[in-house]
Length: 240
Ligand code: ADP
Ligand code: MG
Image (cartoon, rainbow, N blue to C red; front, side, top):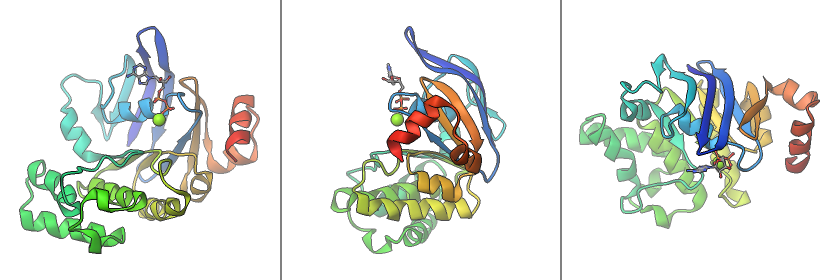
């Protein structure tokens, strides 16, 4: 579903991604971890064309992301992204956050968009919050709305960039529960997260990035049971 082949990227002289290669099969859940500033966000933003890259290729469902002829806005409607800081539309109600792109981009009728939105809000446990505005919700609720909003576009894959790292501890589980549900239903997911319990539960592989390099890309059990790389060991020592 997602093929990343020898991707490199620089900001001026600074190489933020160095020859990164990995792939994610349909229905697979891959967790990406690594120190702050190691290039995790940059890598997943490259996948849906939010950041350009200099070398290599990325293909999503056969679409060449780096090809200038590729319709990136169309690609982004098919690949959902959830950010650390939710990034809901503050001036729109919760229901309108979920319907606006369905109507404007997918050209769904208002009625269909609202039915879809309500079903998704129900699924993330927030049907009773539909008329509120983002600022009236807790961080955990806002993040669940952000996930539901991405799902409203019927994505072929979902990218998560530290979706729980801005949340108070008591709200982390409610967001992870939604993500676990998605994973169990077979959604293709790349999750940048340091929630290693989540990784152990649902990820088939864990990727460790350090200094823009993919240092490890291993099946989850092997990643945790046999840590030989000193960089990985040091990182896990800090977060576990
Ligand atoms: P992570 O998500 O792992 O914390 P990022 O992908 O956000 O790391 O950033 C990787 C590196 O690239 C960091 O050193 C960061 O300072 C740098 N960086 C990110 N965005 C820019 C930018 N727009 N211009 C210059 N440097 C950037
Ligand atoms: Mg980041």
